[in-house]
Length: 151
Image 1 (cartoon, rainbow, N blue to C red):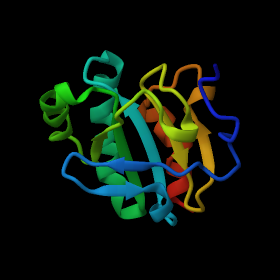
Image 2: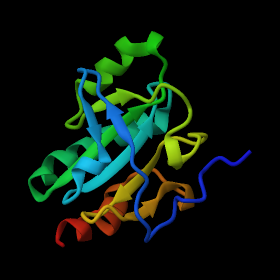
Image 3: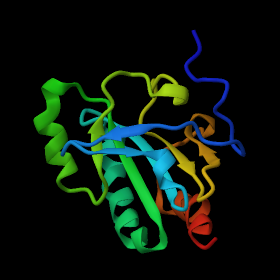
């Protein structure tokens, strides 16, 4: 069984995905053309995720005016909603429950944290599955995302 779809390729259109936020809204990547988008997948029980989220949140807040949108997909179950809300309350970007281990054409989330970056034209520019160390660091954000914000 494949863990990711064959349509997920850097330099090609990013597959659409919808975040159903904790506050009841839906945000579709298809509606975010013109923005740089980071899709990040995490869980409250994932220690590297918990370390990464504040860094990503701070970066997202600093660069929102340049057209950056981060969407946070929690792999936690509905029974952990309170813990997810507690984490989400400290973040600058919207969060929702993924609902299953599958994220459409992004495949099955078998390793977290993992993120995917989409440029302003809707093209996948960073595929988290291809990164040996996919956790966001300041250096990695500067290398991958900052140049996209200048375009």
